[in-house]
Length: 210
Image 1 (cartoon, rainbow, N blue to C red):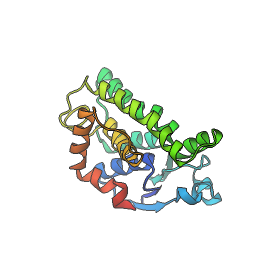
Image 2 (tube, one colour):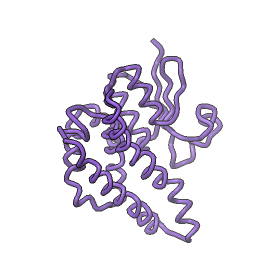
Image 3 (cartoon, rainbow, N blue to C red):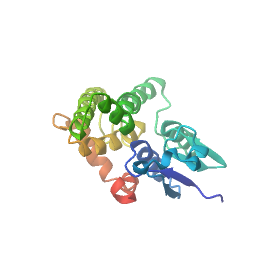
Image 4 (cartoon, one colour):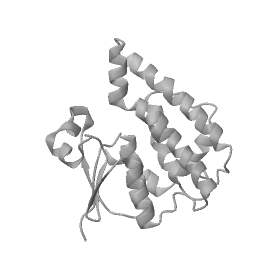
């Protein structure tokens, strides 16, 4: 069997999502760190893997896949993870939960984006933190409100982890890194506690892989 290789970075939330999915699928893989701190993602070696110069990149089934949501969708469809319901309305609502983080919060809080934006304003590390908190907390408050449509039993939308959980947990890790106020988020914190007890999430945590 061909070795599965994940090119990732421990603190990358996009990579973190994919690690959770691989663990849920029970897929053994070799992790190759691409150190975003020293610009390894822009090296010619990595650009040959992914011209966008981003992580994660997953080599699996004779394929080289990029973009975390696309990778997770592939794993979901080929490994039967059940991350989204087959029922169209429920599927759309859970996908919207996931996208509220992966499409709305994550891009503006990508470190390279945030650093560039604060540099334009003559910012410092302090204003970088202000930028992160400005976008992350309102985004999580919205996610909390959206969760009211679902029963957390104990995950975002039911009794097994779904796509929304895979997006939420890495975002919460980043929220804590930037000292985001997580008060008034009881549904989110309950989901976080459930995920923290799940071995697939524990094994994917940045403190475990770095």
